[in-house]
Amino acid sequence: MPLTLFNLRRLFKNIFILINILVAVCLLFSYTAVFINPAKFWIPAFFGLVYPYIVLVNILFVLYWFVFNAKYSLISILAILVGFGFLGNYVQFEGEKAPKEGIRVCSYNVKYFVADGVSPKMATVEKVVQYLEDGKFDIICLQEANITSQSFRMDAIKTKLGNINRMQVVRSSRTGGPVTYTRYPVAGTGEIQYENTGNMIVFADLIIHKDTFRIYNCHLQSNRLKPHELNTIDSLRYTNKPKNYDKVKKVGSKLKQAFIKRAEQARILDGHIRNCPYPVIVCGDFNDTPVSYSYRKVRGDLKDAFVESGHGIGNTYNGRLPSFRIDYILHNPVFESYGFETGREKLSDHFPVHCVLTLKNNQ
Image 1 (spheres, rainbow, N blue to C red):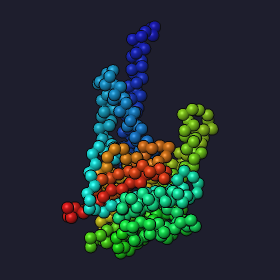
Image 2 (image 1 turned 180 degrees about the vertical axis):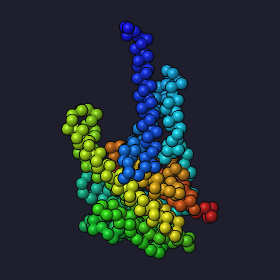
Image 3 (image 1 turned 135 degrees about the horizontal axis):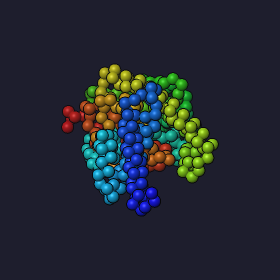
Image 4 (image 1 turned 90 degrees about the vertical axis):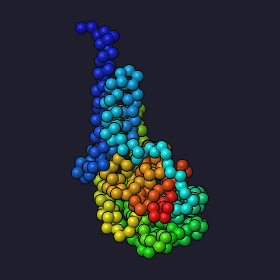
C-alpha cells in the first residue's frame, strides 16, 4: 500500500503518542525516587534528579495536544496530576512577606570562598561578609567554609558581623566544613560525623526567647564531579563517540555512589532529629533535589520554608544545571516561615537562601 499523506500523518501521530506515553511513564517512575532507598534500587534516583526536565517535556506535550488533538493531552495531564504535590517543591507563586520581628535564618554553601577560581579569594570573602552583614541575620549556617586560610579567619568574619557574637566551627576537620554563627546564647554543641567522607553535620542548641531549639547545619554527600566530567555530559549534545559514553558511565557511577551515601547519611540525621528533645531547624546543602529519598527522609514531619513562604523557581545550584534546588531551610511546625528568598549573588556554585521564622504562640 502506497504511503499516502494521510498514512504518513497517522504514522507520525502514533509515534508522538508512543513517545508521550514513554515520557509520562518516566515521570511516574521519577515519583518513586522519594520512596525507594538507592542502596536497594538506585535507578529511580536518577529519574528523580531530572524530574524538572521530565515534567517540562510532559507540559510541552500537553500544549502540543491542546492544539492538534486535545484528548491525547490526558496522557501527560494524568501523569502530572499523580505527582502534582512535587511541583510545589520547585515552584511557588505566592510567598508570605517577612514580618519586622522574627528569627532571620540564612544558609549558604560558600565553596571555600574560591568563587570561580581554584583558591580562596579575599575579595570573595569580603563580598560574602557584606551580603551576610546586609541581611542582619540572627543565625547563619555556612557550608564548605575554609577554616585554615592564612589570609582570613572565621572568627575574624564573626567580628565583622555586627549582629553576631557566637560561632561554632566544625572540630573534626582540619581544612573546613560547616560553620554556624548566631547572636543567641548557645547551650550545647555537637557533630555528626560520617565514615569515609569529608561531609558532616554540626548542631547547636540555642536559647531563643527562653526556650531551647536545635539548629542543624548540614552538608550531605557531594557528587564530586570534576569540571571535565561535566564537560563530558555537555559533549553528548554534539557527538556520539563511544569513548564519551564510557566517560558518562563513570559519571553515572559517581552519582550512584553519592545517592547511596546520602541516603544513609539522611537516615542517620533523621534518627538524630527524632531523638532530639528540642524543636529543630535544619539548614544546609543536601546535594539532592526535593524528588529524592534523602530529602524526604530528612524532611519527615518538618516544614520546608520555601514551600511555606517562597516564590518563583527555587533553584539554588549556580552551576551547569540551574534547575536544581539542593539547599534548604526546614523547620519544626512550632515555627512559621515568612519571606523565603534565594539570593542571586554569584560568589559560589550555590546561591544563599534565607527566611524569617516566628514562633506560632508569639503571633
